[in-house]
Image 1 (cartoon, rainbow, N blue to C red):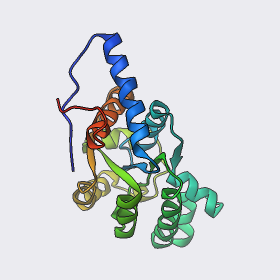
Image 2: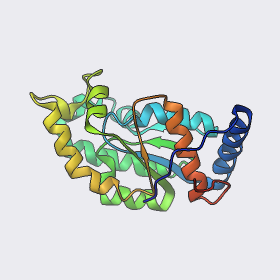
Image 3: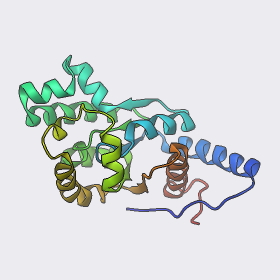
Image 4: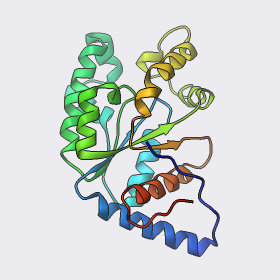
Length: 207
C-alpha cells in the first residue's frame, strides 16, 4: 500500500498544466485496467469517483447501481428480502463482470473488497484505491442519507466502529491509500491522480 504527501503549492497556471499532464499520462498508462475505489460507506467513493473519471476522461461505473440494474431491485430491498449473503454473491458476480470492461473508474460497495475473490480479480484487472476516512467524517456524511441497510438500527455509530475494526485491515492491502477528509472533492482527486502517476511511473514524483 502506498500513500502520498500533500501536493506542494505552485502558481495556478503551472499547477493546472501539471494536473492535466498527469491525468493524460495516467489514463494512457492504465491500458485496460480499472481504477477501483474501495472504502466504507460515506468515504466518498461515488462523489470522488465521478470527478476522477471526468478528470481522466474515463467512464464511471458504480457497482451498487449496476447490482440494482441486474437485480431489478434496490439494495435495501435485496437485503430485506434475501439477506446480506445473497447480496454479496450478486455483488461479486457484477464486479467481476465490470472489471472486464475497463478502463474505467469503478466505485464499489463497502463490503465488496472483503471478498478474497474480488480482491484477486481487482489485482488482476485494476488498481485499487482506498479512500480512508475517520469515524466522525463518515458519520457526518452517512447521516445525510438514510438508505444504508447496515445502519438501519438503534446505534449506527457502533456499527460503523465495528466495520472500521473489521474492514480497515483489509482495505489497507489496496494498492493506494488516500485520505478522504472534509473539504473540496477535487483536492482528493488531485491526490489520487498524483498517486496513480507515481504508481504507474508515468510522470508523478514523490513530494
